Image (cartoon, rainbow, N blue to C red; front, side, top):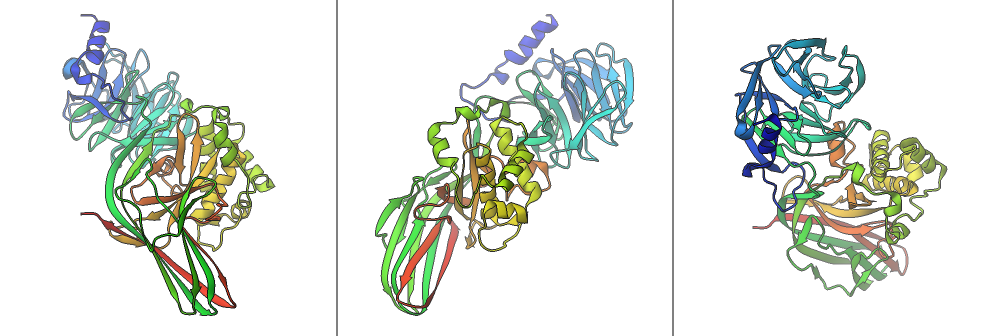
Length: 533
């Protein structure tokens, strides 16, 4: 059997690796092989089979169908960690020696040795021209000239414990052994795009075979074959079933009577990651239901003659199953700005008083962040990156316009959202916001603060959640998780573009009244969460 025949048999024929007819999201396990050694670290694919480095045996194994060992070579150092194949030669990083070795894969002869650019070179990858090194101590991804080790590029690792590294022809893939995640990284833009859960508890080496990603798990001693792109762009997980009871207590402290009182409650609906398990119930019954210009439904309550020291109570209750959601966006697959439907553009590119998108400050910040970028994903992402780099969370009081917030450099979740919407609309990316009630820490909890974030429209993917407030973190992977991800602790009740006919610039609840004279009115709004049995 020739090597080419072996490759076809190993990677295409066995039932273990047969693809399902159903679409699968990135990270789904297609099959697995036993590791040839007890402590697998680095992985590489040479066009014919997988090479596996093993820490305990100090051997490099080439494996075939069913995990059969086709060849073994001695490692050139004492602690092999990363592997890469450059089309002709193997490269091996060694954490004990702090070296990177070039080997002849036929007989294991060491052809070259260079000093690693950092103290703990764990992962290796070949991008077609140069080597990439993942360093666990300095937590960086580094591109080097393989001739002498000269550093060509260096940027922060997605997380604190990078191990495996692979290149798929466009992107880098990085494994992390502590977060148990695998990250997609743009080497051009130096940032994480998305991540998925690693298949095992100690994710180590990575290799790309031309279609799928392979991941060696050190603890389980297995080699997993993973889906990279099967056309499925979103995944739901970790569902929670909760009863959410919203209450609004409106108190008239007087001394005058309220001649009229209106209260609007946003009515939640099914969404991608939330399913209502009951009818939405109200007490008392609303006078009517109305929809604003964005299609958001509201329950309208009306009262009259609320005397001084009088109190009005409004309640809404619903059972819902809420799941976390992750969107797997490949930037090169996002369409052009011209692909965005006109019905989306006409509504969600509009200017308004809170946005002021033609303001010199907004225009200047867009130019500073975006430059000559034309890809809608990277326009939206660069604006996100810029915002979290220049803002800090602070409840300053009031909702100022986006230019004022950006000049100040701080704001609440609403001001993060208004600012991001202004920047994206000014750059030609349709955007809107969603408002929610929040599960605060425990499954049984209450929320009287609420939360909102943005959604951007990316052609080919649709509406994508972007929470700049939540993404304002130090770790690059946590920043990326806020661009396309939602946790399972939000009941989304409001979707809008701002200046709603009934909600104005607020979300969830709003009250308005008229009085016969001087009076003081206070509304106490909260949402109670309780897990369903």
